[in-house]
Image (cartoon, rainbow, N blue to C red):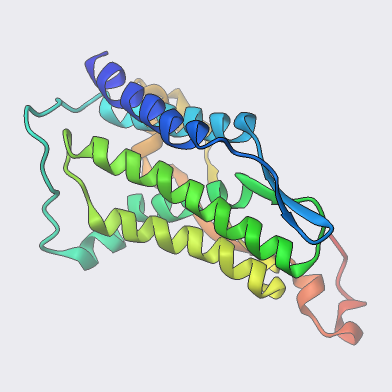
Length: 212
C-alpha cells in the first residue's frame, strides 16, 4: 500500500501537473492541426501510474533520492524491463497527439509533440524512481529510443509498416502475485516486431500476399 500511495500517486499528480497544466490545444499547420486532449493524456498518465504502482508494491521507499547503479549499462539494456520501457514509450508517443489530416508536416509536428509527452511521463517516472530503485539515465535513454522510433515513422512512412508489439500469456495473471507478477514475469511475455508484409512487398509480389 505504501508503494502504491507514494509511488503511483506521485507519478499521477506530477504528470498531471506537467502535462494537463500545459494547456494542450490544437496547433495550426496550414489547413491541418495537431491535436492533443486532456482525455488522451490523462489516460496515459493513469496507465503509467497503474503500472508504476504495481512495480513499487514490493519496494520500500528510501529516505533520500538517489541515482541508480548503472556500472553495467549493457546489462541494463539487455534486461527485458528495458525492452518494455522502449515499447511503452513508443506507444505513448504514438497516441498522445494526432494530426487531423495526413500531410507530412502535420504528422511530423504531431509526432514531435507526442514524443515530448511520452518523455515527460518517463521523466516523472524516473524522478519518482529516485526514491525507490534509483533514477536511471539508461532507462530514460531507452524511453527516448522508443519515442524516437515513433517520430521516425512520421518522417519515413515505410516504418509504419513495422510496429513494435507486445503480448502477455493470460496464465501470467493467474499466479498468486496477480497483475504485479505478470508485469515482471518475463517468461510469459513476448515482445516482437510485427510487419505489414503486404505493403512492404513490391506490387507484383504483393498480389500473392493477403492484404491486412
